[in-house]
Amino acid sequence: MKDKNFFITTPIYYPSGEPHIGHAYSSIIADVFARFKRNDGWNVHFLTGTDEHGLKIQKAAEKANLDPLTYCNNISKVFRSLSKKLNLSNDDFIRTTEKRHKVSVNDLWQRLLKSGDIYLSKYKGWYSISDEAYYNEDEIIEKDGKKVSAFSGSLVDWVEEESFFFKLSSWEKKLLEFYEKNKKFILPLSRRNEVINFVKNGLKDLSVSRTSFTWGIKVPNSNNHVIYVWLDALTNYLSALNYPNINDKLYKNFWPASLHVIGKDILRFHAIYWPAFLLAAKIEPPKRIFGHGWILSGDEKMSKSKGNILNPIEIVNNYGIDEIRYYLMKEVSHGSDGNISLNSLENCINSDLANNYGNLCQRVFAFIKNNCSNSIKKNTNISQSDKKIIKQTFDLTKNLRNLIENQDLNNYIKSVINISFLTNKYINDEEPWKLKKDNIKKMNNILHLALEQIAKISILLNPIIPLATDKVLEALNIKSELRNNSFLDGKKIIPDKINIHPLNILFKKIN
Ligand code: ME8
Image (tube, rainbow, N blue to C red; front, side):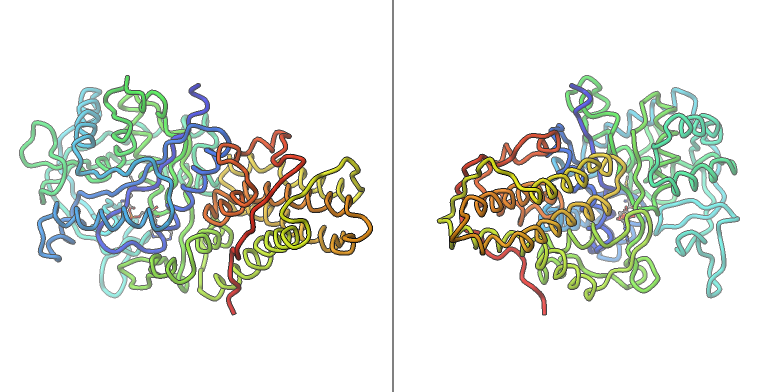
C-alpha cells in the first residue's frame, strides 16, 4: 500500500569537523517523526549520512594532512557513532563517496544534459567555501574589511572559471506554480513565503560544476570538471533508494520522499534547486521540506567557525540521551531560532521528566507494588471523575496526528505532558491510598485508569524518549507489537486484569 510508506531524511552532514548540537537537533527531529510514524502503523524508511565532496572537505583534509578519502572515512565514522549515541532509528546511513551514490549522480546529470537544462559557460562571481554556496552581488556585505555573505556571515571569494550551468532561470514560473499547487511543500509557512519571495525576485542560472579543485564526482565525459557539491549531495536522497533503478522496491515504495528535515540555512538548496533539478529530470519532487530554526548560543548560530559549540556527546554523557532529546524537542521552538543553556535543560528535566511523567509512573507503580502485589483488576463502576479525565485525555489526543502531520512537535509535546499533569492531579484528587480499607474496588478502578493513562502517555512520548518509555511499557507487560497508536482510534491498551513489574527510577532530579 503506497500510501502507508513514509520516507524521511536528515541532511547529510559535512564531515568537516566534530559534530555539534545543531547536527544532533536536525537528526533528533527527524527521528521523532520516524518513530511516531512507525508507531502509527507506517512503513518507514529513515535516512541519514555524510556529505563528503567539495572544496570545504578537500581543505579540511589538507589541514589534517590526509588524503580526502582517508579523512572522510575517519570522520564519517564519528557521525555514524553519533547516530547511535543519539539513539536514532535510521534504516540507512549513506556516504556520498559510495558507488551507489556516484551511479545515481551520473544518471541525474545525464538526464539534465539530455533535457537541455545544462550548458557550458563561464562563472564570474562570489563563492563561500564554508556554505558551499554561490551568492549574488547584492547578497554580499563588508565586515571588518572582508567580504562576507549577508545571509550567513561566511567569508566569500571571487571566482572566475569555466563551468557548466543549470538553466534555473527557466524554472522560475514552474517552481511558483509548483509551490502554489503544493501549499504545504515548505513548512513552516514563514519559510514558504521567504522562498516564494526569493523566486519572484528572479532566478539566475546556477553554476553546477567546478574546475579549480578535484575532490568530487567527475562530470561525465569531461576531464577537468567536478559536479557542484550541492547537486551531488541532494541526490543522496535518490541514491539511497537505488535510483536510477526505478523498479527497485525501495525506490518504488519510497519516492517521492515524504519529508526532508533541514535547517533554515539550507532551505534555498532544498526548496528551490532540488525541486528544479527534479522537475527538469522529470522526477517527482519530495512532498515536504521542513526547515527548522537555529540553535543559538548567545544570539549567534552555533557553528564551528564561530567557536561557540556545545558538544552533543558531552551533554548526552552528563545528562542522558532521553533527557537531551526531550529538552531539544520541547523547549526549542521548531519554526524559529532558540537559545539553549544547561540551566534551562536542568529545569526542563526536573519539571517535566522527574516531577511530572517520572513521578506519575513511580508513584503508581510503587503503590501497586506495596498495596496490591503488582496486580490490578478493573471493575465496571466508573465515577464522574474517571469520565472527566477520560474526556480530557480524548480532547488532548484527538489533534495529535494532525500536529505531527504539520511538524508541530512543540504543541504535540505540550499536549502529551499536559495529560501526564492531569493524571497526577486525578490521583491527588482521588486519593486511592484512603480507599485501601473500605473501598478496594474503587481503589482498583482508579489505579487501573492511572495505568491506562500511563500506557497512553508512554506510547505518545515514545518517539521522543524511547529508552524511558520502553522501560515503562515493559513494566506494564505490553508486548512491543502492541506499543502503537491504535488507542487513538479507540482501542484499549491494557487488559481488565493486569500484572505489572516493579519500575526503577526513570529520571533523577537535578539539584
Ligand atoms: O548543511 N542549529 O551540512 P552541515 C540548528 N552537508 N541546526 C544546525 C545548526 C545550529 N546551530 N548548525 C547546523 C549541510 N545545523 C549539508 C547538507 S543535505 C543534502 C546536505 C543543521 O553539516 C543545519 O541547518 O553543515 C543542517 O540542517 C544540518 O545541521 C547539517 O549541517
